[in-house]
Amino acid sequence: MTFMHTINEGDREILRRVVKTVHMKHYPKDFITNYEADKIISSIAPEVVDNLMKVGKDFKIDRL
Image (cartoon, rainbow, N blue to C red; front, side, top):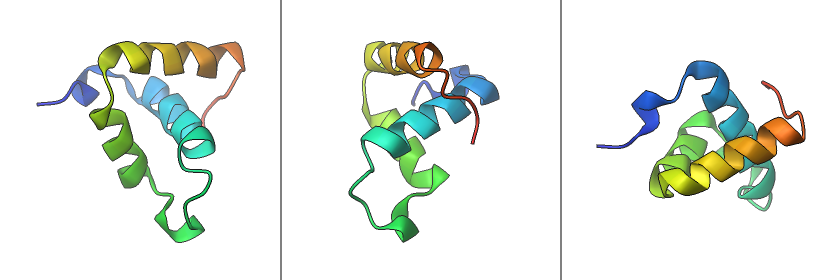
C-alpha cells in the first residue's frame, strides 16, 4: 500500500509536475504521463515526497 491516497489532488498535481520536469526530462514525450509520474512518486520515500512538495511550492510550480 502506498501513501498516494493521503495526498490531495492539488498537491499531487504539483508533485507530478516536479517529477515530470526533473526525473523524467530524458524520457520520450510519449512516456511522460501522469501514470508514469505516479509510479515514480509511489516508489520514493514519503520524506522525499515532502521535500519535492516544498521545492514545488517554493518555485511556484502550480498545476499543469
